Image (cartoon, rainbow, N blue to C red):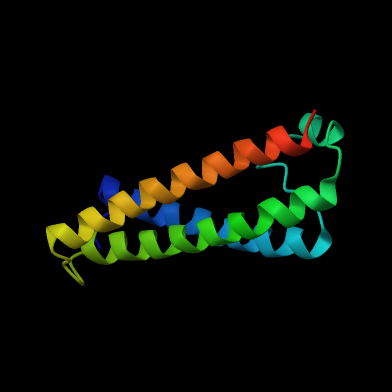
Length: 116
């Protein structure tokens, strides 16, 4: 297996996705917010942690799921196991950027709504 920069990047994106799905589900069930998303200082200023968790953690799990998908697609493509055509790679990259921007926007919106 060729360990190029892109291969390592794909593995990191996939692992990050697994972590985001895990914390998204775990924190949603416990009605908490992971300190990776909201710092401890911000959580102290939060008006309603349960509502913030209900709002943010499902979106975190969805974003994580797409990170897993993106990582797998990139890994398959970069290792040559499934060489995707350039348009498919472009669609995945654009979709990843769009979903990342939407997730970041929702994170910022949730901070504005629940943290004073």
